[in-house]
Image (cartoon, rainbow, N blue to C red; front, side, top):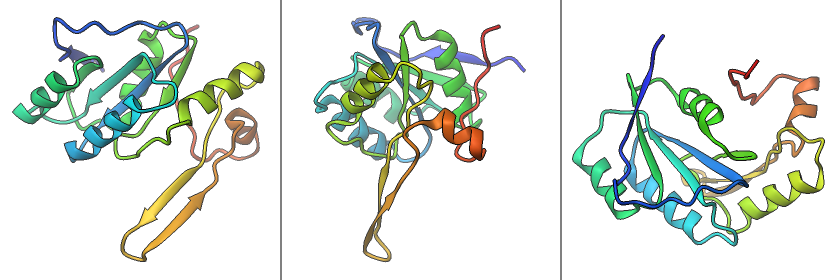
Length: 172
């Protein structure tokens, strides 16, 4: 299947290509979630230089407006749309010139230290191929905050049980 990615970035934007890492954010749904996510990422202790947003839905004027307000990021439209997050993640994996990739869901708000903690962990543990992090889920209906603990060493965890796995097309 052939897929294309239309670049929606502002032509005058100057995104700084970093050799450290690229954040891949597939998005489908409420643009307010993405807006909050991007704003929080900008306030991180170590703001990622390369943030790539993939819209997996029909592009409307609201998408163009958001991209023009936060123009320091790269925006792409997945075509055809409604394919799920792994298409964007695979494309990011193939195209990024960064040493590390970080996946961020558009409806999740990263903590201020998420990127620096993940980066420090993989730098200090060079044999770790994939690093994970935990999640604090806010259940508004039950009025609870639930800690979801994902393994920090993802590759090691996948050897034991294939769950929460990420799929990539590998370069051979």
